[in-house]
Amino acid sequence: MARSDLLIGAAERLRDAVETLKFSAPVAHVYNPLVYAWRAHEIYLRRYGNGRKRVLFLGMNPGPFGMAQTGIPFGEIAAVRDWLGIRATIERPPDEHPKRPVMGFNCARTEISGQRLWGLFAKRFGSADKFFEEHLVMNYCPLAFVEKSGRNRTPDKLPGNERTALFEACDEHLREIVRILEPEWLIGLGDFAAKRARAVIADPLPRIGQILHPSPACPASNNDWAGTATSQLHALGVWKGHTDPPNAKSRQSKRKHLDF
Image (tube, rainbow, N blue to C red; front, side):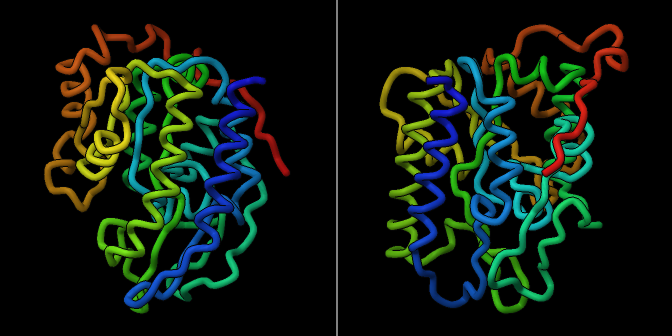
């Protein structure tokens, strides 16, 4: 079976496992893009999840203007549409916060974290196909949590019993995708993802590293995040040398959008 099919099966199991979980105040709304944005997520895994990946980048959970809108990890709309070449119909979650509606590819807000992350990869590798030859980006947790005020609540802030049940499902999914992809490196985007990776993965491989999270909520990320992240990846030995394509424009992916 193709690795992409195995990843899709793993995502389906994670989607169904977390869909049954209950969360208490201050969480008022729970978004599961693996349900309402499944079409886009499946396209992402099927198109880019084949083959062994040398590097697996791991984020925390969906951002309100990224994966929560598009179903793609760090899914800033322009990056998903124009660089990854993915476009799909996004449904609406059953219980939205009025300040955080899911507009899919019509969302006018920008996910800065995704803009920075995919922007770095686009600059370094030129085409999405070139990047995904050896890399994949995934999230640890598929759920986004919104408080009554509309404020985002991260998984690490959940009560202990709710966190335990959620992390059990997410841990199993992480183990499964590591078995499928056999990466040499598992790179946490930020402290949370790196800590979960170290807690879950006990084998010598993949080697686990951490780079600065691209979120603007992290002050250090607002001063040349791409340069800092590149230096960190060089220091770890994940990236070597300078691989910007000599004619990046001509090597941009020519994929047509896949519309559903």
